Amino acid sequence: MFLFVGTSVMAQQVTVPHKVKKKETVYGIAHSYGITEEQLRQANPGMESPDYQLKKGDVIRIPVITSGPSTNAGSKQPVGTRIQLGVMLPLHSVNNDGKRMVEYYRGVLMACDTLKKEGVSVDVYAWNLPEDGNAQTILKDPNAKKCDLIIGPLYSKYMSALSAFAESNDILLVVPFSIHAPELYVNRHIFQIYQTPDELTEVTARRCADWFGDYHFVIVDCADSTSTKGAFTAMLRRQLEVKDRQYSLTSLKSSDANFAAAFLKNSPNLVVLNTARSPELLQTLSRLNAIRQANPDVMISMFGYTEWLMYVGHQQENFHKYDTYIPSYFYTNLQTPQSLILQHRYQAHFHQDMMPSLPRFALAGFDHALFFLRGLHKYGKTFDGAAGRFGYQPVQNPLKFERIGNGGLQNRSYMFVHYKPDHTIETVNY
Image (cartoon, rainbow, N blue to C red; front, top):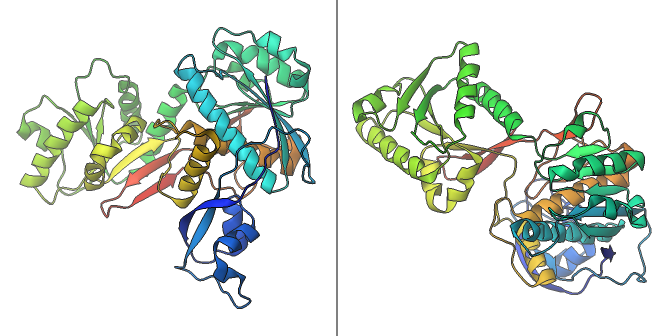
């Protein structure tokens, strides 16, 4: 078991730029980056002038706090409610599950560090709960009953034990990753962050059909026997048929003439593949380039899969070229000031960079912990995670919960990451 109590702040060592937007204030900027107004003013000496005015378009410096978590339980704590947080995840270096969850846990600690600057003290109890572990042994630890909030488990087989423990001890249970959790439907203490794959398939197909109401859909069979995306294209076709919408079916094996015939010239076309694999995406892009060359006026957009975010490094130009929408439950631009600050803080705290994974697990831990701990601090055990409870802007993982019948709450936040032809990127939340 690990115990983390409070954090300390050292001198500022690194700054990153922030371009001021309309109506932003010194207080609001400092608050959004988890620093004090004094720290922001110290990094920007001009702000200390009595006649200083923050203006749209100004570029100011945001200090990166490079202190690490303090384990000094006797250190002075700020005035405010103390929250008891438990983390029950595989925290080890034996396999990738453990390594990812260690990084996630570090993000949780960074969120606690940010909250301490806001006057919120958090005691963190963390237990290693690997795939071959024993949840009952952990739950017998007297510190487990002290928790106001538990994050875990990673594995479905522990869900029943943790759910019963949370309910009997009036503890909020946050299930951070997608696992089978039937207890969600009967236990009001549970927050499930990720929807099941079947639920995501259904909602994505429905939203896709609604959002692109003026588009002609072109569904491409890619002859990928390993693909699981046929369930999505089948659901999408049913949605279109219910709405009495016409669509075209074609194949990568079709001749150039037959492939091109699937596209309309007087309507925007939305291309949907039945695989997320890169080789078939490349083949499709080659076919689309041929159509564009022969018929420059044909309007083509693409609708992809979350896996396509892994291809951005090589395919971003094509994504912009074909006005691509990628459905996802997460997104972050690693070059924004806020993301850069967290990357600097992670490296300074833990002396290594975040793993180059999607999503970034440290950012997920940071978003999750900040969201729920702020919610507990403001609303206590009545916190329901609904939209508008407070103004936190997520770095990577948006959260918006809805209650499932008389049971727990499930995150319903989802987005389309839109690579626009003007080479900008927007996130369309729904």
